[in-house]
Image (tube, rainbow, N blue to C red; front, side, top):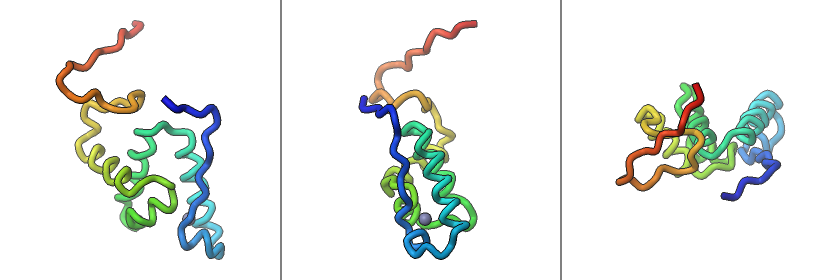
Length: 109
Ligand SMILES: [Zn+2]
């Protein structure tokens, strides 16, 4: 697992931020990326999936520029959200490839 102690914050590459004449949008995109930098991989794509479904949301292509995530990753996040994040845990990097039953963590209660 390649976890860096300090996550790099992605600099938005969308046309609006590059033009630099819409400080409100630029600040919003910076905050989106700031939040994303504190999330783990599945959480990042789920958040991007939510963003992609807002009423006036940018296209997946624009979202990819804003967040630095892959368009495929954004689509996957949206699909997983549509499925109710069924069987997905934010702690897991990836699901085990089927077959084996899900190992439940021991809970302290
Ligand atoms: Zn931007």
